[in-house]
Image (tube, rainbow, N blue to C red; front, side, top):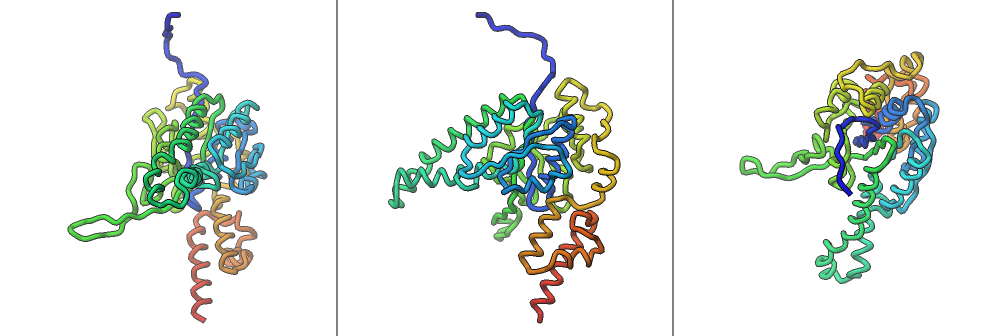
Length: 327
């Protein structure tokens, strides 16, 4: 049988996009907005490993929800994603993919299980078996990644980010600085198997200091027009990506967002849902009534807190804690 070539045409190209952030960076909210645009407003699928946190967005976005529970093996992720693809969802969001690496039963746990099986409590033998103990976890991860490349749906993978530091010698002195890496910025690194960000179509980092605005980890030249660094990733970003995947030019006009005008007015000046959850958790951890914060900010709910009041709200909480400790 002879091998056949034909002219290359970009059509129906599935996209694999990674969104990375620490708390307050807006990755989940941004994923929902991007998925809405990519799906053309049709329902998309959300695979949730975060104990139902995706449901915080149920009133704002149109999606079907599925909970993925431990153990977070690569095969479990693959089964869930393939089920969504078989159900013909146009877009699949996974929040969070980080559990595949560092969650209960993920790659790190699996490696430890293999070490226990191979060497038990013999620490000298465990040291010798460290590399061999990665064989099964890594093979399963590679199989998952190879099959994700065969999906028909667009896939958005959300990753947590952790702040890392390193000690290096500068001018003869040891100094501590944010860890430098190809996969992060200012010490913020994605929690995942190290090669994933580079196997995706695009990988973007979001910082709590500027939620929703992308810092590229991997972004090829033809994709840059979709993710300008000075503007939040939103529904129109997804619409343009969808059009491009079907053959449209990248530099075409920005389509109008499918959000109702009233939705845009209500949501654009407020903090993201991730930021609201963070402030709520911070209050609860420090025995501060959430309503007290709302009263101080002169809003009815945290969700209606203006975006430019986010940092002031964190400072207000810190002030309350300091005054309490000073008594």
